[in-house]
Length: 126
Image 1 (cartoon, rainbow, N blue to C red):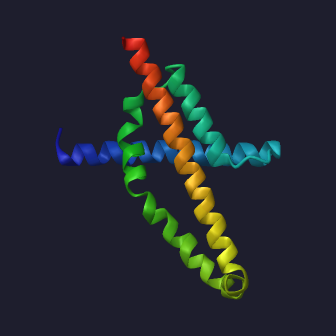
Image 2 (cartoon, one colour; image 1 turned 180 degrees about the vertical axis):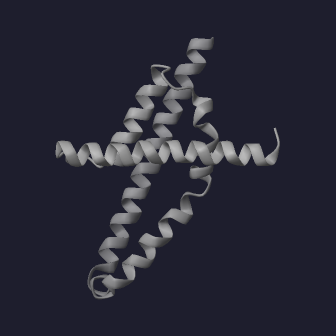
């Protein structure tokens, strides 16, 4: 596959994922749901993948690119924090502790889940 073709496939896949997200945002607005549309979009894509309505190959390249460039998507949020400097001066330590604690919890729970999935797969193959 040529680089140009691979790039175009990746762009189309990212566009499809973006459309899922935007469509789910509209749906949550219309139905007045309290769950973010992007989360609902992830759930819908997961269900579609599990039921084999869509194939992983149809979105894999775009999803991998989004994951690889995830850090770039946090830059606008980090810049936006600058307008809350007085709050950070007052409560910055507490916020930092909550962020560190929640990150550790997420890392631990992700590791436990991954370990259990790996053990389950090993037991099935044995």
